[in-house]
Image 1 (cartoon, rainbow, N blue to C red):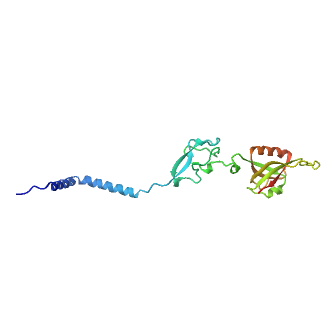
Image 2: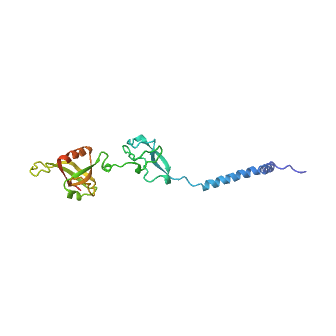
Image 3: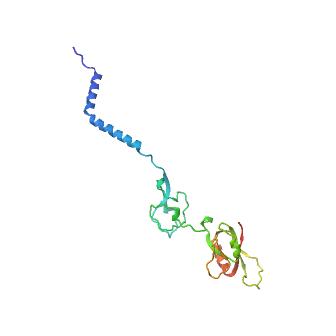
Length: 217
């Protein structure tokens, strides 16, 4: 008399029959898993990003930049333009040299750079005509000078009884022009960084005094 198959044996046969009926579905699922695994293996890792400053809105070059005009944005590092400004760069009060559209990356080339800014935010570039052209020949940008004004110049019969007055002290030389434009003025021209108050005083003394310099370094 034949014996009935055991319960585990029956279960294995049922599983085999189920797999055989669903083998196409299972094969499709396995192929999809294989393709997904291959795609994950071949996909390049996420690229590095760099945070830069971009325009938060359309910006007008006639208005100084304020804190809310720029915002930070992370961009793929290879796409970041050279000279892009990064968060932490102090742009408050700076001027743009052209209109900027919202979202545009702000680079150093977009900012106008006043000549005296490197020596202080409140300084301006001031042309000074010095009577002694030979003294100006000794200068180069970066030297520091005192500008002195002596009254009574041009009158050999009027003695100078007062010492020269210091109009601007310890000021950096920004430029020494190679040659003056024709205009009949004597002396030589140099450009220094000075405060607005010193600039007004120098303009006043230029008409009534003889300007000279002492060289600090």
